[in-house]
Image 1 (cartoon, rainbow, N blue to C red):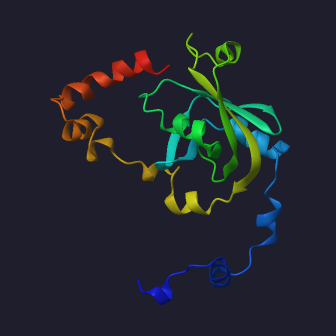
Image 2: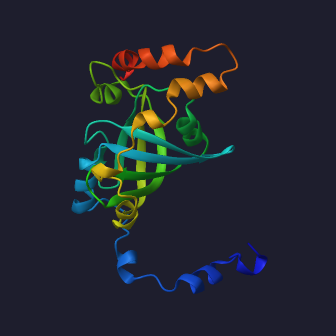
Length: 206
């Protein structure tokens, strides 16, 4: 890549790509419309992007559809379920409230993007309202919406993400145990970990 091919200004970028279609502008709202509300309520999986002093982070979140609760047209709430306690997302939010959410729905080509400001609450009653299998989340991420808009189907259509023929045989890729064993600084039996993980997940998923 030569310097003459590197885009370094917004003006050059817009000149290279051309004008944005008006519909791409009109779809951006500062609140949840009825249509956008339906997409949030149908989604069982969300990618959560945050930023902190160490850089950017993107983390998956998933639960039964509707797990991201709509408080009002400007506010959504998401339980923070049991994880590995790295707390990358939460540490970022504490220091920088900016957050970006990408909602995905199995079998649906469109995705929904929400950008806003987040805060973390441990309110006992609110956490209890998100209980699953008798277990409360440690906290709830409350996001105030700045912008929300849907993304068209092109990316998922190109990837064929939901197509049955796109499913990857799990055995063709390294397992969690194999990866952990290769990187562990202490003795670690990856095979035993993999064999026991299905039962472990049943006990610790919530």
